[in-house]
Amino acid sequence: MAPTALYSHLSSYCEGAGRCPLPFSLVATLSVAYTVLYVLPFYLSPITRPSPTLSRDAPSVIRARIRFVTISVTLSTIATFYILATRTNASPLQMLRLLGWYPIGISEPVKTLLLTTLLFAGPLLERAVIEGRWKDWIRGQPLHETLSSWIGWRNYVAGPVTEELLFRSLLVPLHLLAPLPPDRVVLLTPLYFGIAHIHHFYEFILTHPHTPWAPSIIRSLIQFTYTTMFGWYATFVFIRTGNVVAATLTHTFCNWVGLPRVWGRVEPRMAMDGPVIRAKEDSCGEEGKKPKGSLLWSAAYYILLVMGAVGFQQCLWTLTESPRALTQVG
Image (cartoon, rainbow, N blue to C red; front, side, top):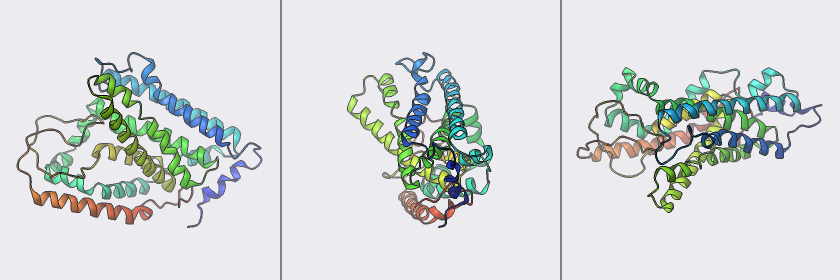
């Protein structure tokens, strides 16, 4: 694959600037600073700091944290624009393109969501058909439940938007200008994203003081692993599409679906009264009465899960291809 136009311009951004490519030490320092600035405010104020009597899911905590991360991402964005303006020859329009803000195509988010849907074909079958939620989806009930809950706003709106702006839109271009090979950028930058979620370990032991440390540590390591793995995918999508909206919608979709089950029988569940909004760490699906499971549904789920994974692998490059790509990967 031939390099895209923007890739050929990366080196031209540095011509005559005298201090570019950006030193990797500067990029690493900024990445750590941005990550700390994103997480640290959660613990500096009593209105955002969890305690044994104050959950991170409390509406007051969520509202305050959304305000703080919005300020943090705004400051990080201003700093990034300053670095690009003073250390490169990029024009304002080129800066917006490098950050994936312009132009915002429609096809990239649509194709990326289609690709991600393939990966979660099994869980979507479970929710839509086996659990019978497709009627609620048609009526738009999940959207209403999301917008009426602060947990929903955090998990599906504020979290994905601010995290993708910071960990993809800001960190990835800086690393590309370091310059690092795109493959290494895909592997490296999600580590900041994964590390930014380790603080949940502290929150968990505060709110679950009687839980032994060993399972708490294992829980945090698992969370670090899957957030980093998602970060690899989101970074790949961002570089391949040059579209921060595509990465953000993918993030929202994955938060909504949750981790797919990889064992156990798939069972229809009795409907529950009232809306169900899950905390981000909750396992998929709400607790309810469980009728006798169906081997047929279980077989259909796992077959579709495998077929979806195969389809995802086969369509990965095709459905992320875009003329707006930041550079070539692979």
